[in-house]
Length: 103
Image 1: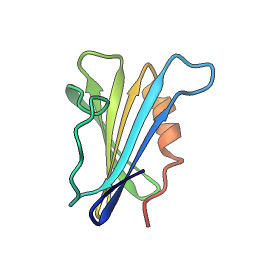
Image 2: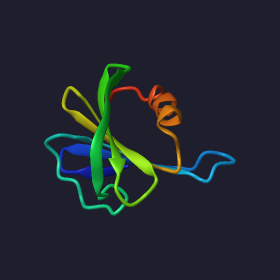
Image 3: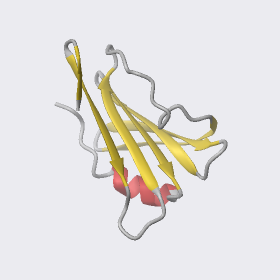
Image 4: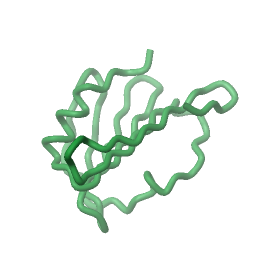
C-alpha cells in the first residue's frame, strides 16, 4: 500500500502456485498521481475483450513483447490495472472474478 496526499494506492504481485506465470496488480483513484512502474508500462496490442465482473468494467489487451495480457478495469472513481504473463485469458478472467471494487 502506498499513500499519495489524499489517496491510497495498492500494489500486489501474485505468483500462482505451481505456475510459471505472474500477475501484477495496482488499484488507484483516477485523480491520484501514480509513480511509473515497469510492471505496468508494457506495450499493448489490439484490444481483446470488454467484460464486466463484480461491477468492474474491464478491457483486455494483448501484450506485444510478452505472452500475456493487460487488463484495465474501472468502477466509479477507481482504476484497476492488471498485467499477466504466461497465464491464459480464461484463467485471468477467473482470477478477476475475485476482485471487489474499492468502497
